[in-house]
Image 1 (tube, rainbow, N blue to C red):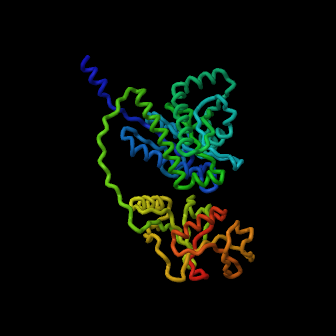
Image 2 (spheres, rainbow, N blue to C red):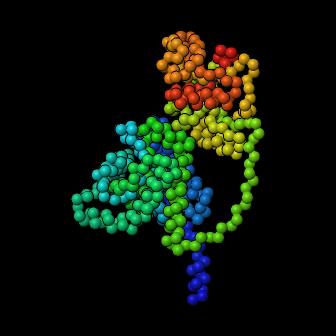
Image 3 (tube, rainbow, N blue to C red):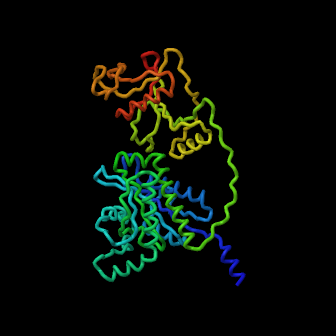
Length: 419
């Protein structure tokens, strides 16, 4: 009896397995968004989500159904989950609609209630079977057959409660952590969930058919935000799972005090991502879904910078991220803070190009005054501001972009002529 008591109270955490399924892949691109494809966003977020779990939960085994751009049949995804005896299965997707004003997150579990409201999503996510060779293995479900309904409910009853719990945690976290709009937890007949022998959910991170939400989800910040929200929901779910399982928390060892990194004095670091003789719009495929570039014209070239920090470690992380996005020539560049240009030189913001001449205070300038017009070839180029430091020019750029000129950029001048 004494031996039993010692064993029961010293029980340690058992391994927990989560299978993270990045939707679509390979020749199955999923939805086409305003800034990137569904398969790319889903994979990026899935990798970030799993990495956060691996970093913070040593007792959790993370399995990805895919870590690269490959095609997987829906049945293969469930097979991977079941073969690893998953405790939780999360399929990551992006939503799309013909109504481009549609926004918000929603999470699905297997079920029959209110299925009529989710037919569009079910059809879209199940449509991948038409890309598969053996389509007959997906049995058609008849909701009007009482025997089929009973068998369906029995099969899913063991995991439905926990599926709903995790789905609810995710939707609440999207709202509380990101301020996103939640369309709620829904039930649907989804092939990728049906054969999983574990709590299983399919999360739609937002509508990539919507300009604002699609651009956000394709951005580095958006993907990181979503991954962190998924992780927060998982962290709470895992804590509840441990309590239900009667697993004791391991005594936390004091963590070593990390050495605080000192910011660079009088310097800023940016990532010089690329240069081009062309000026790309914020949605151009050459920018790979990133939207927060700082563009500076130097002579006949446009130089694209990403991020700004005074911490070397943060700059290293940004550089790694840019190279992972495909910008192999990216490098860290150091700038002196508030360094003034030489006499006569200044920074201006180019916000419009036209073949027409406009007078100062024209309505097309959206309230900008003292606009400089410079003729180049057959075009009239319009500039605003005249600053001697990059920091001041960046503030002017933000002001111009807030006026609606999203593709404005900074140009170096000598007097009133572009250099």
